[in-house]
Image (cartoon, rainbow, N blue to C red; front, side, top):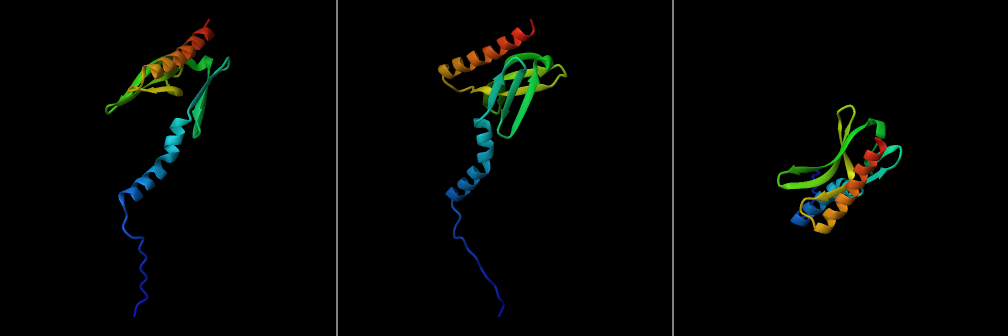
Length: 123
C-alpha cells in the first residue's frame, strides 16, 4: 500500500477567486489612493507610498493639465516636463473623466495653483 495523502480544500467559488484578486490588487489600489503632491519654493514633491520624486524648479520646463485616456477610461492629471525632456505625471491632483462638476472644479482649482506657482518661480 502506498502512502498517498490527499488534501482537499473543497470547491473553489467565485468569491474565493474574487477575494484573492482583491488581495493581490490591494497594494496597487492603496498606492493610487494615497498620492500626494507638495509645492513649495524649492520645487515639487510628488509621490505615493511606493515611490517619491522631487523636482527642483530649475529642472521644470513646463506644467500643464493633460488628459490621459485608455480604452474608454481616462483622467485629468498634471503633467510636468523637465528640462531634460522627460514627462512626470504628478500623483495628485487627479480626477476621473466621469466625475461630478464639483470634483472637476476642485481638481482644476488645485491644478491652477500648481501652474501659477510655477509661473511665479519663473519671474
